[in-house]
Image (cartoon, rainbow, N blue to C red):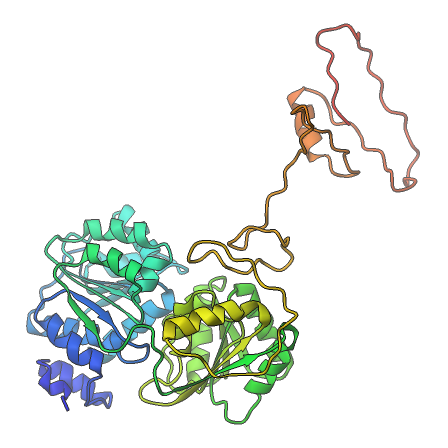
Length: 479
């Protein structure tokens, strides 16, 4: 069995690895580290929780130890792109941990926080920049960051980066990077259509896949409970109230759903906090720190916010709502059974989510163990074409609302047979459109009659205007 000392890493890097208690590299590390040390581009796929971050961080630090050149102002030697703020912060922490005996400089550029400290950090240049695409583009457009001297680019969680609409931003960023560069894309899943896009950024890459794509780690005990939608909250409280739950993550599909579940768990006397995109960066950081320290036992999260949650000791993962993208299932349950430990993943599947379950089973290649037979009366969710188009509409939205959680737009007018717009009767108190038309005609706003009952003051007759009906300037405002 290979040791880290067999991979060609410097003594400075090995000292940090040993200080963290690691001696034996994981399969992805055994393959990626030598290839990156040789300067090759990388297209790597490995199960979540198998050490992908260290697989590219250790070679980067080794390169700096062997021959560090002082970066120019506003520049970085290495750029690491991540889809979320949490993952960017997690990567930066790993760099500082494994580089504790080195002299590298690191900066983190993400949205949701004030840009001033980021501008100051980049003013003198850094060895490694960890960033999310949006905020990085903002700084590039203002001249705060330059990438013309960047010679190494890492895209972590590459499938998510490309699949969540970051493609235009990534193309702009890659267009500013030096032509002679080393590029690595690593992820837990790499769908074929995403692989085709990723090949645009790579030159003769070393394709490394240490496990079948999208196969959950074998140390996770997976369970599916077929339940009625109305019974989910009660079952969730029973699951998380058990004595064997040391630390748990609950997944929902929407931000609003995460807040509702968190409130319900707190009302039941359980220690829970929510993390999602509507939270400020300070709130998200504090929540994640509390979860890591054990001050919060249950973390309720959405899929995107969960990227970068690398916390040891998560005993349970619960899918309160089944993911509508099957690859997200692998990422979700990969939050448990990390660093060689075992874990439990429980999915609460109602009748409307059975199709999502079938998609997941097709992806992982086997049937998940299911119990119960509830959910027969749950209304199926509408699905349409497109990878991300089968989302559940927001609560309160019309049943015929469009995909993407956006309510359908109501037409202002119903058409008559002759093509003329049909007049609609104005409701009391709703006169915004008439006010605008009155202003266009140069008229003053007419007082509204109260049709719901007598007013508090004396009624006044409507003001009459003396107009010649035959005048060409005569106009009538529809009531």
